[in-house]
Image 1 (tube, rainbow, N blue to C red):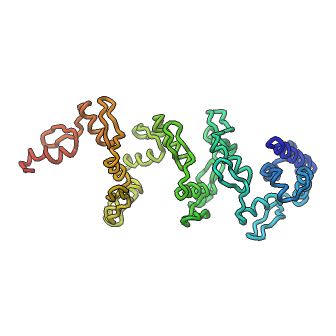
Image 2 (cartoon, one colour):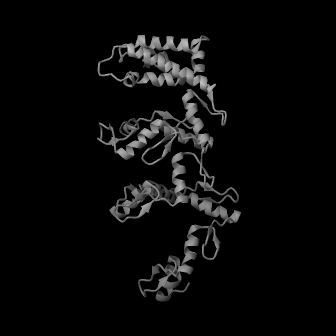
Image 3 (tube, one colour):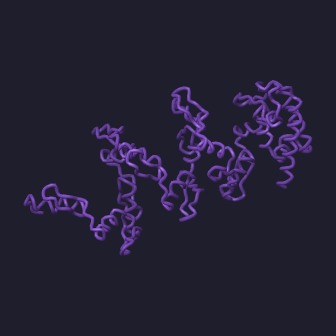
Length: 392
């Protein structure tokens, strides 16, 4: 069946090629491949339709005849490349080709007739389903000839290639910044436009990608899985960051001190140590912070907010990591083990402190007598009393 559909699609492309060659375009279009791509959307439109799609919208006549009639109609309406003949009665948007209007109408009707047999997810356009299936199969048919990295979409490969070429063809007229892609998304930073809305909670987003990723909070969908530990993630970006825990890869380096990091955002935060920059200020007490996350954590001191509650005993915590550590009291989990003696601990900090027994490291020094101690707590409490004669 898939072969017959591809054959039909091939026939339609050939038909379009033949008819476009008859259209009088400027003499500079001497290559048939260039003619096919002018107007640029025509072949995209042809390839996005299957035999089933045309039978539904144009009756039961043969796909080949229908393709000829449809293509001929489109070209007759568009001998002027700038002309847009087909108008949506719902929103008024116009299109060069009837086939483009047909696809657009499904946005208003909400029709999603293409369904994934694996997970049941539905799509408006067949090509969207084809791409989606690759999340299940892991297929990445487009490979970079320079570094070998593979992609599910050809357009993703083209954008990736600009990393190697350094090409940034898109320039923002407002700030002058250049981009390899996604200029439209960048412009929304200046305009404040957030055209994508979550249907569940009403939150607005500047990009469809951000909105879809957010939706997984509500659906619980985590389609990206780590091959090493099987942990699942809501986005491919989160998976990529996680995988560096296993590989130890730290591709981002501080230009000042040479320290390496697994994430670019960590480098940016680290750089503020060198610059002394603390752009986030608490409106209550005026204390400044390196990151917005640090400020949010600090703000809970003033509000008294403790949003993280233990489901077993009900104790509430200000920070998620403290709840995680607390839960291990109930479960008995000790995920941090000493590689030297095998002793296990509930918290990473406990393991770090324990390791000093083996290494002999005493990183905290008394400013009065110079004595070195294993932890800061001992320095501040018991040791300092030897100088002050203070009784506990």
